[in-house]
Length: 426
Figure (cartoon, rainbow, N blue to C red):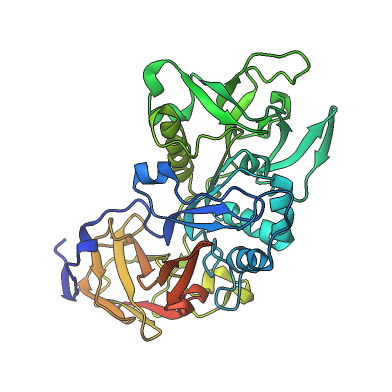
């Protein structure tokens, strides 16, 4: 069928030609170096992969010093939320993940979990459940677990995230390094061959953990790596204990990856490739794209609700986010129109795709005109299932500070941009 349409406005900006796997997210990585965690300025693997990143860095790490008041306020505002961003930095107004993956540093797991409080820990759980992925090293690995074990007794950990419902056991190996055996069928091998010997040497280790006992593993747990460290008299034997693992609860949740050692700071060689592979596998495990609803002929869909309303299918859109809808176009439909009307001073883009989710890199028709009002019109259209998406192209200005990033500019977008969408035909 030959398509006839009266209004499709396409602006050939440079971003039009950039195909991004990260479409629908504000940025790729959020690096948590918060209270009682190591704070890093750089993540070499993110640079290798050319991924966008923001971080939070506390000013105190040592167990000797309590966090400063400023640390606590900054961390709470970022993770739990504030008046300017009631959902916190990890989540969009409708509860969907704002970053593709969160990386949590080493440090003191229990202290960091306690510093977040139950509201902060719940933000992490909600982020994973909604489809965001996670990589944790050392303390970040401990924090994934539902509990730990000591003297053969399992202790539940309410101050951990519990995003992997398994048990993490301390290695008791301090200020050392280990080799790691790569599992023969490890999914990490799809990214790098690591020299072809299924082995990575000399990975820094300082009090990390291993996954405890295979019979206690939750379903969907994948073994990625095992420790190569000789047994020593009077020391805990960790030889071939599981040093890195992955877990993905369902197709809509994100992938959780934990490693008991520290490959994150290395800027060369197989250890750098290891950290890059962990991040790539996490990102490839982002949750399946979610559909808001099916639109009906002539019915206006109003996306005006706030996070506080707890009604995500009608909640406002966030910065760089997509909202996806579906519509069934019947045979012989004529004069099909699609209209989006949003709040002034924001840029909302409109995409249309047959039989698949519509993105800037995957569409049949689109309207990228500046502003919040968009329309597409067709005298006729191939019958069947069509997917519509609305993208909020407006975002904040991120300014780097000594503790992380401060948002300026259109910060109201953090709490969402209201809009309506209408599809009608004769």
